[in-house]
Length: 154
Figure (tube, one colour):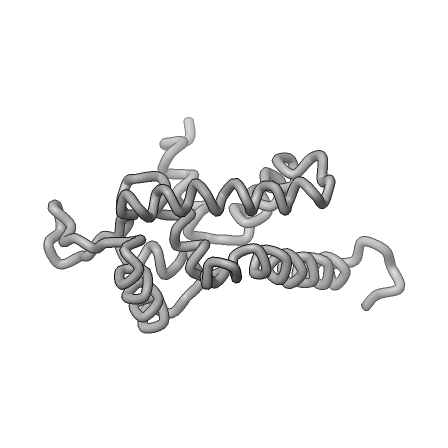
């Protein structure tokens, strides 16, 4: 894209290509279980056991609300996810993994990790950390969350 190595266009191209290739690779791993990358993202978010509002799941899975609702309906039909009214804000719905969903996530997580290990990326944790830092710098909402977590400046 650019004659200058390390130009912003190179970063965008490289990130986009890496995401597409990684999605294709993981999609092949998940296809045996008829699970999409989007469904995997939802299961991974819900795997923390906290339950998440559907609006948060939509944002984290990069899916519009209507598409997410259909996807979660499919996961509910497969007994991987269930929904409950938020006990604090009864206008909100929270999604959780079922016991079967937790087992399936753990099983699939092992397969995904094995597939990634085959790539031989020794510093995957470093790469994730650097990308999370970049995301934090690019996403104004995350910048505000960080500022709120750190507290007022002195």
